[in-house]
Amino acid sequence: MCGIVGYIGFRSAKDVILRSLKRLEYRGYDSAGVAIVNDGLNVEKKKGYIDSLKVDFDGTLGIGHTRWATHGVPDDKNAHPFLDCGGNIAIVHNGIIENYISLKEELVKKGHKFISDTDSEVVAHLIEEYYRGDFKDAFFRAISRLKGSFAIAAVHRSERKIMAVKHESPLVIGLGDHENFLASDIPAFLEYTKRVIVLKDGEICELTDDFVHVYDFEGNPVSKEVQHIKWSIEDAEKSGYEHFMLKEIFEQPRAVDDTLHALFSRNDLNLDFDRITIVACGTSYHAGLVGKYVIEELLRVPVEVYYASEYRYRPRVVDNALTILITQSGETADTIAAARRDKSSGNITLAITNVVGSSITNYVDKVLYTNAGPEIGVAATKTFTAQLVTLYYFAIESARHRGIISSTTYENLMSSLRKVPHNIENMLVMATQIMKEAEKIRKSKNMFFIGRGLNYPIALEGALKMKEISYIHAEGYPAGELKHGPLALIENNVPVVALIPPDRTYEKILSNVKEVSARDAYVIGISSKDEVSRYVDTLIKVPEGDPFFSPFVNVVVLQLLAYYTAKFLGREIDKPRNLAKSVTVE
Ligand code: M6R
Image (tube, rainbow, N blue to C red; front, side, top):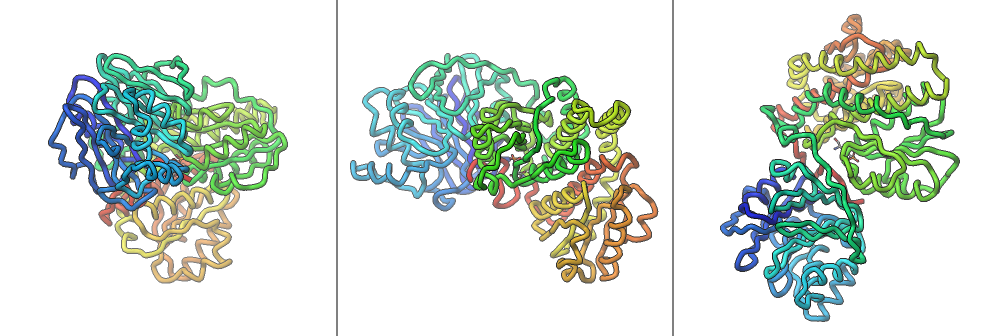
């Protein structure tokens, strides 16, 4: 997704903007650009990486952008910032201007000349059209004409300020002394300040060296709370790891522990519902599927899980349902749309997200934050296990409130949950063995991941991790389904990763393993039971423990397997092709 930054103050704007843009690289981008105001208004923008920008000008006020193409191919002319005809105004935009075609037609008739194929360029011309010597006024008028989702920052060569707006795309403000910052995400400016204002949808912001004023779209002042960020820039850096993904995999014991501790202090989870709908995308959807098994097992309440992109267009069926929206970024457009729809129709809505003040928090009744810390790698890892622990906690607490489980069962479940960070730690020491397996499978064209019950979604997640970062075609399957079609694809040496916890599906999945072994698959078994080694080509032994909690350790094995496979293949692990960290478009 696009990234926006802005700076006004006393430092080199070029340095601040380029450093801040680098910290937003995780969002994925195909071009980058910078606009700096000094005696004039200078712009440098290019297809490709930030390092390829040749910024031979500087100042103390400017804006920058990384673009993830939606309208118009990734090339130099479609890169941001965009200028108006007079070269006085520069803008950067994240989101989609839905009515840009009609606005463009209107502006072209008035004589404006466009150079790009983007929706965003219209904003610069619209501000120009309304400008009568007052940049702030022109900005307000221009914004009132826009439809769609947008975070926009704009500068004018003759006024020392940045105007910005947030509407359904993220934007945060960093407060300094005689300097201020804006960005799509906090890590962009965290090395300069930890004082942050999180903008809400429908807010416009005026930044000068010495003040930040926030207004609603009508121009009324809005008073904002200043938040103090507790995590440091080191938390958002690689700290000696080769990739963010590896660092984030190894951070899981802490991420799960921090998430659990924050949950322990919640006493507002006794919600009233007869059924639950879980809505999410990608990895968060897989967390939702695990949540379904856990909640149905403990609460005996029906749970349906939907992809947000499907759910939002389904007919509504409302009957005292709780809708749980899971999104690590809190910015996924489809998940937000589902939240808005269900809240407006009377469902109780609960978001599970990792980002404080993210957009989804504006559209739900309740928020449960995962405390995983910033996740930079595009592949979700620690946010996934933090989502899992949140869902387990929610299910266990709800079962206790409803009197469904005895206090002994409750204590046993909580005790197992508390052990999860330690079990993950024990799993991480197996990284070298997992790396050796990755080396064996790295030349494969196809792979299968199989599991049953709670571990079926983990098989799906293992396949997703493998395909998104290694680009090997991988499919996750409920193990019992293989013989209904996919078995036709099993041939000599096709890797099959089988999740084999000692639960009620144990014998069944061993039978499924025999089915694929008989067809010469290369089977990697993941289990706490030694005897599994008799049925598989390689056993990756996970720590013993209650199999109800096996998804936590199993998924760590699969994350590492995907990571090392991608590493052997020389892939861009933290920024896989075509993918972005937060998907703010439909
Ligand atoms: O921010 P979200 O959790 O809503 O993101 C949903 C998916 O885009 C995301 O989980 C994606 O599948 C992962 N990056 C895959 O690793």
